[in-house]
Image (cartoon, rainbow, N blue to C red; front, side, top):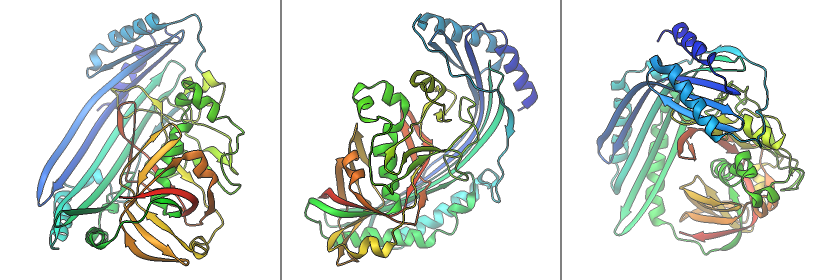
Length: 458
């Protein structure tokens, strides 16, 4: 791709508009996906593409047009502006103004996934698959590898001119073991900003996953009820992302009167040692970037500070509507979608409790690790752990069947009475919202202890 030619085409088309705001984004993508299912290679996909979109704003009305041919760029601009004019209104709030930026961001890695031959990637996954199936009692397995490179050209009528690339690698392993009619599973996921080395040398993790799936066949379910529960960094990170993070996305808040009443800045949501943040400015994570998909510089946003709600996540539009500052959280999964408010790297910050103290004074409780899905509805949540263990007299003991945790997120945050010092981040996930999935994100936490957490045995 001729970068200078592309940029000049975009600038020329952008200058011809009479919209209040105009933005043109062009993307070049290259991706690979490999899937081993059971004992064989089930899927191999390699995609390359070029496309873009035009977003126009006229008196509060948006127009949006996708394209795959740069030769009709000016006509696409006219179409987007026409759409925006049809949707315009006399009662509108102008976009929050921002300083134009001109920048080019190029990523580099010690071992870039984009430089590794496809045959080498397949060979590595086959090796992991052979490790899984060298053990008896396995019913099924899934190994999923993916990598992508996305180069974005972004120009807007405020004077921003950006070229920014993003690289991602993900790997997920899931193993199902069977004995009679009983099937149990175990798995893990990892990811990086394009560094292939994270998926190498995983033999021990693969073997451990197989062993956990088989051990769960021997485990017993626990009685449900309110218990003291310790969450590991993976499950606690998923909890803070799913149960709280989505409530912090400003488009959810201003569109929902019930949520407006819940998410009032200055309201106490947890203990003094509870601090929750989100930000793409946190470096070297899958939700990290320098500029969001509106060209807004990334930031690190305090959501809860010392137990008090102090901030939320914004696009340019939501910041203008709510009279707050943009946070650089407008994100799109690809050129065929407009950017919307999304999380980036969401985490609970380190607390002051040693791990021995978190477990030490629990007479009987549950240690819940990893996760296998869940759902949220406003402030209510339900999550399933990937694995669980009994805690007795301060010690982690036998594995039990995975448990389901349910409750009200605000009550649960208040019931956190210990936060560890061992923050760890999970980079293997992807977030879904508004039909855009999986968006690269990361989430994390130290170990946390929750009192009176409602659980049910699976």
